[in-house]
Image (cartoon, rainbow, N blue to C red):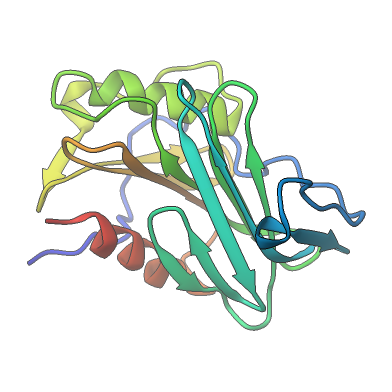
Length: 202
């Protein structure tokens, strides 16, 4: 059994992608779907839950209770000194976006969901590029078949970004994926990566 360790050497070239997802609005907001899916975000802190399912763009969910985060595919506890902010994005594809931050700087940004099709050896690089471009608002396509590895039924690629690193994970022959972008290996980054990998592995 092997877990993914943050590599000191990542892809040779720094990618254009940036970790700083647009910080989700700090005013209070809530869903109108049902009380079961009610959430609010105030001053960069989200509480509550939300879930979105579609036929053509995938599905995603989150439940935030303090610093305990339950996402579509896995759960983790964010560092107690940090804040957690969450939203479900629905424009091009449906995914949960969680930002773990200190009020000014983003430490970890995590995106996950059920993709609109299953990940296979034949399509994983292409779909990883789509996720990378959508979530990080990037123009390049850095993932190739050669830099995707498979470990215990999980497709993995790690990339250098302009302001940190990112790891993309997907369960083979399923729709489950996780993207973890981080600016530091501190503040529980490795624990979040381990939790995501453990939830996806066979």
